[in-house]
Length: 98
Image (tube, rainbow, N blue to C red; front, top):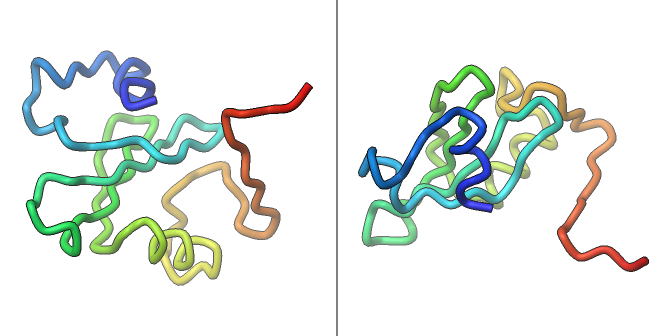
C-alpha cells in the first residue's frame, strides 16, 4: 500500500529520500491519499500528509486520529480529501469475506 500513491504519480522513494518514512493509510475515490510522516524520531511529532491527485503535498500538524476527527467534524477546512463526504463516512479494509 505504501507504493500505491507514489505509483499513481510516478514517484519513487528510492529516488527521493524525502518520501521515505511516509506510510499510506487512506485514499479517497479521487486519488487523494493520506500518509503518516514518520521522519521525526519522536512519534508524538509525526504529522499527517495528504498527497493530492495533482501531486501536491499538504501537511497537517496532527496524527491520524486527530486528522480523522477533524475531517469528519469538518474542523479541518477546506476538506483535504476531495471526493470523500464526511456526511456518509465508510470504512473499507482489504479483507473482504466472500
